[in-house]
Image (cartoon, rainbow, N blue to C red):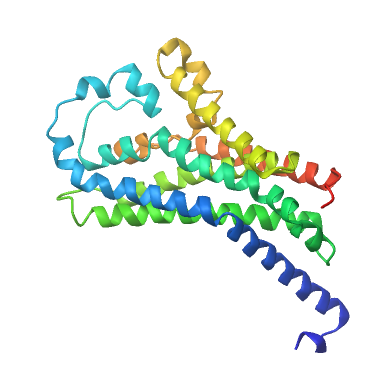
Length: 283
């Protein structure tokens, strides 16, 4: 069927097929960290249901409102208001960005160097596919991994509602919270792609991207310890991914997530520029 098409149309079809191959290859390369992220995400959320009765009966309001806990969680919880608060503390706090953002950053950082190491990059670029298309297909694979992680976590929350009496989950705000976290994943993926474009070793690139996510968490943590350090939090990406406020208090500063989208685009496009101009190592 493809052979019967005109030459230009056959070339377009072939390029689309190569782009899909690169996308599937990227998903395959990220399968192990993706599987780990989904496993840990589902495990953490599903464990909340049996733990919630004991936690809800404890009185630890003083601990929640302390500056130390505020630094760890990324936001201050003024009162414990049921299962959504417990979910926000254990899953949708700054730990979400640290853990799952770290996985996405690692996947993004290793996406390009892995294909350099096994020689598939040279093979792909010898066919009718440009570096730009290859890079964008790899980036899309990273963001699909981030989307899968988020959907697995939401699915685990849905399962929890069958075991927690009067869970009180506002699904509209849960999806808004998940969108906020996905914008952080978008930033983490763009940051990973930038690191992957700069390094030829997958472990070095993934480790650099993960290290920057950890640095962002430390900035957010130390900035939340005292009001005089609030300016420090604003320098880190986690400040712009508030999750406790939308999930527990149903409020959100609408432009915060778009800061992360813009930062992710800047990182991703910078990585594309570097990838197009660098001399790729020969295998």
